[in-house]
Image (cartoon, rainbow, N blue to C red):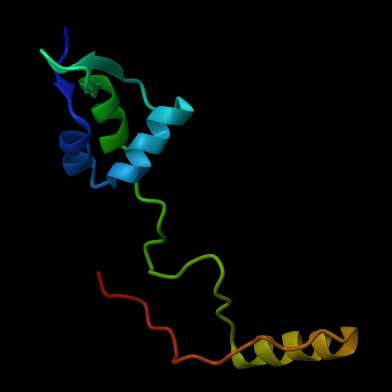
Length: 106
């Protein structure tokens, strides 16, 4: 039988939050075994070592450059063209200028 991990141990090893891990258990995305603490009626979820290996191999969903998918980074020429199209279509501008993006040095 493979090693089993509690939710807290699994979270510490994978750097995931307890809420997220519990949600994955409830939706069936994470294999687990429910065991009752001896002498009580309190259940404890145990996660097998195979699941830990599966999640440790996954990369983060965050982009390497720190941007998220909702931020538009454009050149001044692209920004001008976007604003022209939005004005032509009667769409109010929600574009804000932020400080210039500089990639992190590796």
